[in-house]
Image 1 (tube, rainbow, N blue to C red):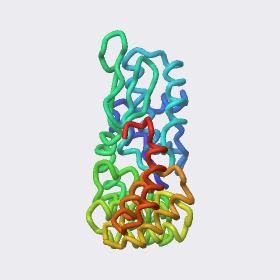
Image 2: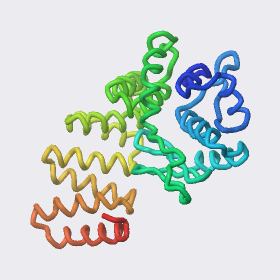
Image 3: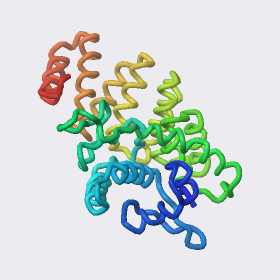
Image 4: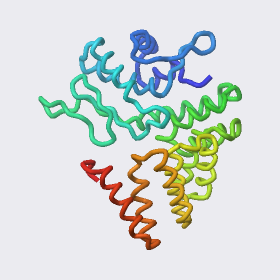
Length: 277
């Protein structure tokens, strides 16, 4: 069964195991029960517990910290990796962002600010150890997929291996195909990325992210007409996807289809107005 043991969490956070169990009892995280009733924490639980540690160390009362963590849990993105996310605090208010942290208004000092990728760096050796020393043969495709999500921020190579293992067990797993395709794409393998994006779409035909990524992979391979079709399908599923309008506009401009290009550019500007783009 996938998850991090109490001892793993304590080691990564630098706190005693009993404190991890106490925070779980207070509702700061939502671990599952594994074999023999052992607690198993998700990567999202690690993010929440790291935030709890910092809030409590800053003197925020446990009850107020609990409210802040419940709010954070609702706002953490579901179904994708967290590696690009930063968690910061302004007083006992938690904020999620990708840029610089929040600051205390009265002092100009950051209460705390950490990148989730920092946790992923600590997760990587534990995942590797788990795959080698524990009964990894008992993990299913979803478990390997979740390991891959956890690893991306610190070890893309290990993440690729985890997704590949998930796909050995379930070749149609949409998340593993999508994420492996993205990692291959980032590594410069457009053809490999295209293959996995198409497999993801076989399982989830209307997935806007997979359609957009497919369009980019096709465009990078010089397949302009196919890329346009992928962007059109993306916009059918996700009309708010501004970048699909922008990319389609660029291709249409190159193809001399100026009126169509202008329509997409106008849509892009409308969607991004006020967004600082």
